[in-house]
Amino acid sequence: MEGSTDPWRGVPPALLRISAMVRDDIVAHLRRALPNEGVGLLAVNPPDELAGGITAVRFYAGTNAEASATRFTMEPAEVIAAFREIDERGWRLGAIVHSHPHGPAVPSPTDLREARYPDALMVIVSLALPDPDIGAWWIGWQDGRLAPVRVPIDVG
Image 1 (tube, rainbow, N blue to C red):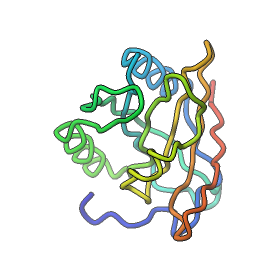
Image 2 (spheres, rainbow, N blue to C red; image 1 turned 60 degrees about the vertical axis):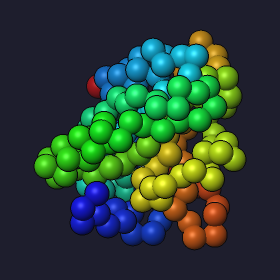
Image 3 (cartoon, rainbow, N blue to C red; image 1 turned 180 degrees about the vertical axis):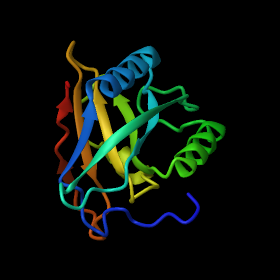
Image 4 (cartoon, rainbow, N blue to C red; image 1 turned 90 degrees about the vertical axis):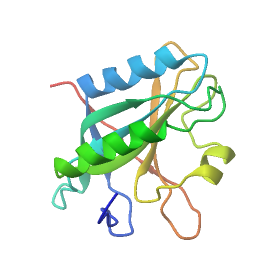
């Protein structure tokens, strides 16, 4: 994104707040992508330094150009359109979202190897069980360490 800087200043946010409505949008889109991995982008408000977290404001559903159950690439035109709107609204790219149809909500070696946006969280939704499991991960450490980020769902 033009003019993008590290919104977390080199450390992971304490948490990623997601409303029940945004969570439902994410899960519905990712289920529609089955048996393949689904993909999308999550826009957030700029970090709230007092609360130590970020708040999701919109999910941008994407098309997995790989059409694969183990890999994903969001269609470039969809990424550009989402980035344009995120910039126009003063939001930030908060996370790259994708699903694991049969595995846990943790980054796979492929996910880590192909990660291209260290300023954004990696949100993975496991669809292996009837109730989806959502994991968020900070991958921005220079030494390659992963840091889990709490994802409370706001039902209000």
